[in-house]
Image (tube, rainbow, N blue to C red; front, side, top):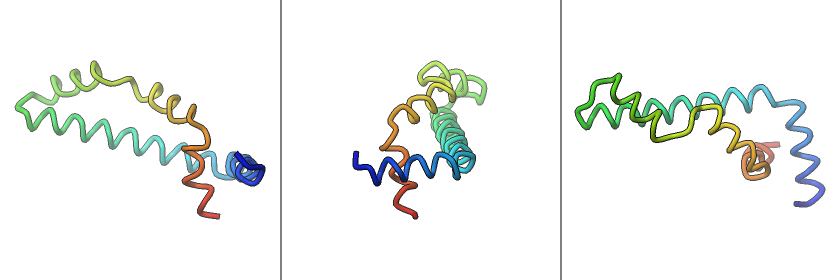
Length: 82
């Protein structure tokens, strides 16, 4: 990664961390709700659908940690907006 990208990532880390975290929270929640809706469409009750989704996928914090662990892949989306 070039020094410009590193500098951009550091800058965004300081100035936009809360916004990035809020967007990530919203995206993970949206994904979960879509997965639950698909299970309900298959004929399951909401409780059973939520249980199936929780069993199939990692929890929201684990998903967010995986996304954060990808570093530049996640930050590059926001770096280009400067």
